[in-house]
Length: 229
Image 1 (spheres, one colour):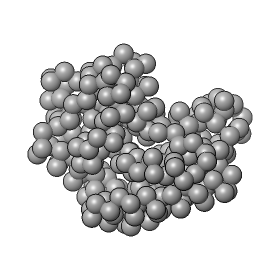
Image 2 (tube, helix red, strand yellow):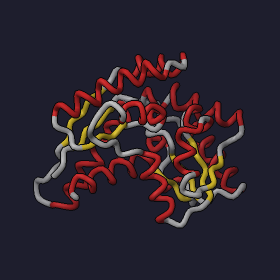
Image 3 (cartoon, helix red, strand yellow):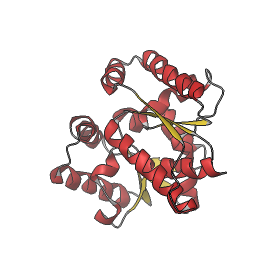
Image 4 (cartoon, one colour):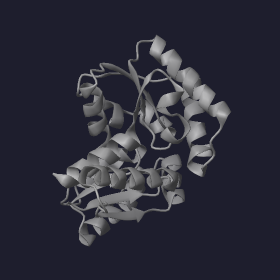
């Protein structure tokens, strides 16, 4: 079994889900008392969020590169950055380590294609929804990407940072997310990417008839299967 390196803490609320899903998948595959070989480096999210707010992506890349190098030295065979947004600096990190990064957008694109999705809605932080670093990974696979209108992008982003990252789960926010998803489905989205690792804490598959693609679940399960190859 390969050893999985996890750069977590962004936020720790969703990092918990990574650990659970990876270990559950390993146990399902191997049975008995089997669990995953993994190493977690949990950063201080306050430092990362401050870099995001100030647009200092180079500093955030330095922080995460140090984490990645630590995981590499500790024996990780490959890495997961346990957040969608910080894949903005994935290439910078990859250039300074020798082990591969399992890219969250790439494995999500694979899941969409496997489910014959060609047009998908993307929900996440404002950085993930508005910038190209994430959407381009989907577009490269000939996927059409829809995002909410500006007011709804603000609502989604604010909910992530002001509620979900702090462990606050609100029925009112869930209703708003479901409304946004329905409107995007009416515009042609065949599914919705939960493109922030915390959104899956708020909206579950049983809450809607729209196909949801939870990036935490996809990323973590893919990592577990990769560890068994």
